[in-house]
Length: 374
Image (tube, rainbow, N blue to C red; front, side, top):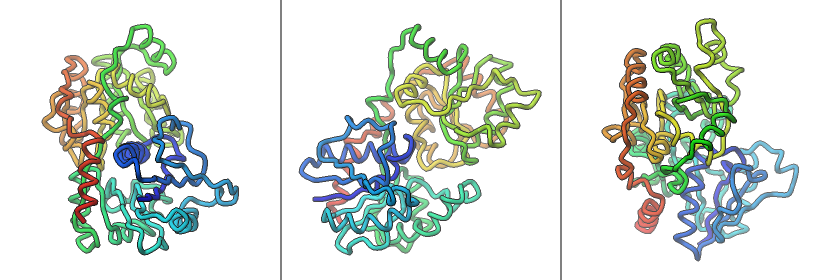
């Protein structure tokens, strides 16, 4: 069988969708070694992805045509995918997000992954480019897909609610992270100090991982830091959040009453460094308004790092009732401050065995059964 994959997430830095695609694709290719997986890229593979990690039956296809590489990715998708589907006689088209090209061959089965319904429920938090892409492709892709894969039961329920009229009635659910990377790691004191020095971290710290999307609610988290820092002296280490100096966050951080030493913006760090930060942090914190899954929460817990996270959306599936995880309902600053200070002061242990179901191998076994049952 030949599978054609939309590889656009791989030309940007490592993030949630690209992490999902890499994990699912690698596990799939390992289980089905007689099949060929053609990953179409609109540009060079991003440096955050190591080519040595790819399985032999995964072939990366990058156009050498400079004109094609300069096209907006959506236009590239519409032009190239139907051509590549015919060239490689694709039996299946695997889209890591709801964005199906219009002119795929009729015989090619379409798999669409849905990570969230943010564009429906929180459209004001999205960039205009994503809003446009969703208007053109999102609803049509979900309705026309032969197979739908959601990353959580929460997202599955939302798809069933918003799209009762769709071709694919049975929806598959499953998601994981790289468990060989995100795990407890013994870190020597000199290594920990070297990492802290490189990133500007002083002493014990709280970790946040995410983008500047309003949905991540980083401004609320920053508003807690004057009191948290005053009470327990922990820094907030922000990984991601590129471009914060051009956002409303700058007003908070540079205000006269904000303790600037309480917060460190690291920007992008490698996955290996991130795994070590999870292992070193007193806790991971997320006050997000909505998540389709809760990938950083799972990464942190698998590293043995306790978490304090919002009690909403799919984050509840990952964290609620789990040893080492605290979920907070609502956004009362006093409650959040108390929970963060308590977890940092009396760092609870995490039972990693609670997350045995978050494993790519077992997820792919169930996914292949789902494909064969239709």
